[in-house]
Image (cartoon, rainbow over the protein chains, first blue to last red):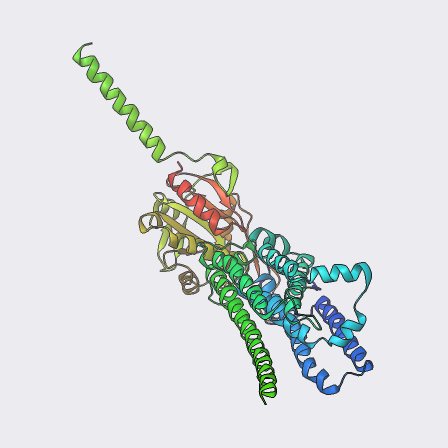
Length: 283
Length: 206
């Protein structure tokens, strides 16, 4: 039996379905939940109606639940050192699914009220600019899926924590221009947002294809890990590549569909308003 | 120049050409070419006879001398090193054409004869490749062979409450080229890409 770990990482010991505690994950989740609850309380103090709060809050809690699922036993442990496919599932949960839900759940009024001013505010505004967020997310995605980087980081708990934090942080940054609370979208219009998501989906194709079609296992961490079940190292890697490609595409198309739907609703509303104006003038 | 001299010169050119062609086709791999660990001293292909999974006597030198032989000592309950080594070898060998594969023999000798019955070894090896050869013998005999091969001897660890135990054993695979001593060993951590690179070199090694 290996000693207590604070974060899931590759340990090169046989997998066991016996539950294991990861105190670092709990602490991390406690920090996230505390921040979220503080924002909700601040929002309540600002007097935002409960109906609006509740509608948004469920998405935030669901996002946090998915972060916890991705980081803790068993998904975190299996993805940290045994199965590349579970590692990719963690990526999808932490960078592609949980962040938009968390951002949807953040109370916009409280965020605006607590938004930092001055230099820090400027840095945050620049970081969440669509161009910067797009570049940062894609660089992070490419870098963390390079075998040399992954194999260097995953065997240590700190390295594994850095990968998970980069995925979650990069995901929040990436989704901020799309669903960030109270973000004015006067310049970042619906067609641009659709293009923003589409570009990333295309970028995701490259590492996805590299991982899927490689003739040999690329990641030493998962190739040399004790096997689980009958899946081979190469089969597991191919599944990971397909998850990245197909999972990433499905999430992106859901995002695009939602943006398109809201765009059409808004266009329709404006059209109806203009028609009403014309009718009033004609009447 | 006489016809005899011209003939001799021509045959000499042909011989040089043939020798050059041979050396291009099959260059001897020097130590730096291998991705495995090159041994300080070659390990001779010793002779020992154990029982295979069909219950028949298996003479190591006699039955493997003409093949590239990858010899590994492990046990089927091994949670990490043994299944990873076997799985990686099986996956890489599958990628080579039959005429190459058929010149490679993977020999697995159990270091846990108490639990590794011939049937269990066969079933475990079949999970990787049916062509893998499984051998068993009393642990004393296996350890004597390991000592001759300059490998650390195997020994069972403490028995856990559920009756299970681990067996400490050498984690390296010894590679004996056809008719030659082992010059390269492959420790745990050897990747499929390393095997893919080294197997053709080992097949050509003398």
